[in-house]
Length: 272
Image (cartoon, one colour):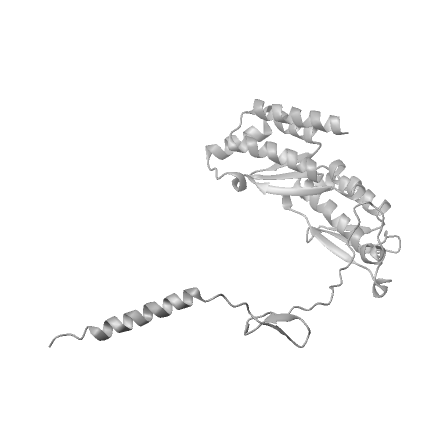
């Protein structure tokens, strides 16, 4: 049976005519419709987003000129920190354990340890030899706030337990921005056996000269306790000493580390 070709041709002609007519039609602009809020929207736009026209309230930020803006005093200023009313008349206690290897230095330096705690902070101190602990207790002569004073005393004793001299640990009681940072050699590089021993020797140097050079240049105090390293000083000074020690652990020659320390020391002298 032969296919009917006339119908398909007529349908194709109708499609072509409809396409040509659609091309000739002018584009119609959407009719503007006003909603209940008075904001004109496009007709038939179901996805239109309603925006609140009310202005937003912005809190005043800190002024860059240094002069306080209106309302800035109440936002940026804080009241003085005071002791809770319930804590008045209450005593606070703390117990600091003593490592076995620090008992002998503790007995030798005990007068230098309890003197600043009693005279400067007003605390009651005693040593419990049975439990190997230093016990602290507040009194009516303790400096306020008592909690902060107790924290300083505990940090001072823990600094002594790490191996620092009493003269260096007292800086935690008398200065504000003094910290202790501790890390291990394996935190920088995984070393074992003779490689670990050589790394410790590189940090200490012959007769401790390398360690003394780092301490004097960065104005810190360093304690080498086996594979652990403790640094006492300010935040910037600790960073300088830590960078030098890490460079020695990673294999930098001591001469290169000394040169970097001299450069840092020169910059500090120019700054201050």
